[in-house]
Amino acid sequence: MSDVLVIGGGAAGMMAAVFAARAGGNVSLLEKNEKLGKKVYITGKGRCNLTNDCSTDEFLAQVPRNPRFLYSALSFFSPRDMMALLEQNGCPVTVQRGRRVFPSSEKASDVTRTLTSILRKLDVHIRLNAEVQRLTFRDSLVTGVVLTDGTCLSADAVVIACGGLSYPSTGSTGDGYRLAESAGHTIVPGQPVLVGLETVETWPQTLQGLNLRNVTLTLSSGNKVRWSELGEMLFTHYGVSGPLVLEASCHLPDPADSARLALDLKPGLSREQLDARLRRDFTEAGRKMLKSVLPGLLPASFAEIFPSLCRIDASLPCSQITASQRGVLLDCLKALPLTVKTPRPVDEAIVTRGGVSVKEIEPKSMRSRLIPNLYLAGEMIDVDAHTGGFNLQIAWSTGALAGQSAAESRES
Image (cartoon, rainbow, N blue to C red; front, side, top):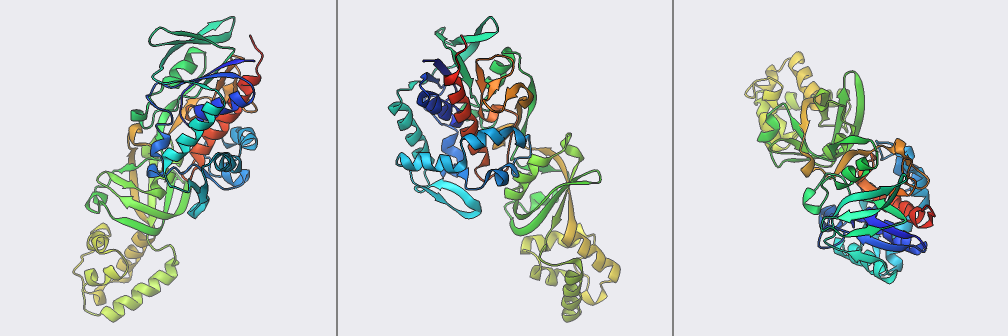
């Protein structure tokens, strides 16, 4: 029987401990907080979007960063496997819009409670308020850990699953990066993703709180379109946010300030159809001012500032609008430009891009290519995905594979 230490009691760590114990390991789960799954509690705004009910290929299409690395982990423990694990242990789940999966109670605490119950049934030794100071090594193997209180714990295998840098209040403060680096691993610098974007333009601030639905947002850099999608977005005090913007942030170039956004406010109409609509509206409006017609096309607060964005006088009679001016209105309705200044800080991000280089991890076992009895899982690996339950499933899958592999390790 292998003694397995799992560092981190979040999604990846809990699942690693479950699978290590199932595989016959003598498992200790170390969590520096006062309870397990602190970040899980706040996912999905407390409802816990725990996975996405899709195929492996569909899943990988939602992973902009190193998707192929995840193939083995997802094959080992799929979204359906996660759903079944919860349901078989008394936590029914429900599939909602976008195939997002939630606990039927819509309480994240039920997910953590269920996993904690499984851990206890498997006799996993859960140590709370146990912060790891450093790993210990001998002969190119990890032999255990030293806690901040001086306690030394030995192990045949160690799983590091400490999360990234996002939501530091939950304990994600980069501990895993530090520990992995001490084992010789390369750390790809962490960046915030699934986060709002600050814009150079200040006009979005005047629309703070306005939510736009059924618009298309396109992200470009140089002459290349990096991403484009239909959905919802939100104007904020710093720029833009909402589902579309969070997803766009996964595709930012480096540096981010080379990125441009284009907002299609009428994606359901071609430019020709929209031109015909404007011609008709302006003809019917006659000598009415432009600002009186635009609320038929845009939300009132947006319609109020839109002429200034087009550099057209809002009080201009519709009958006097030239073909050139109508062309400018069309340009702005179909591709209103915004310039990315910077992503919001990492402590506002849902997940962190960067972490342990996947080149240094064996994808079929999650084992370190540098230390044969060290395993890595979860957000601390350089993999990230769009919203919709994908990032949590990455944690569940990589954690499960790492845990089982660690328990089956016979390195000493």
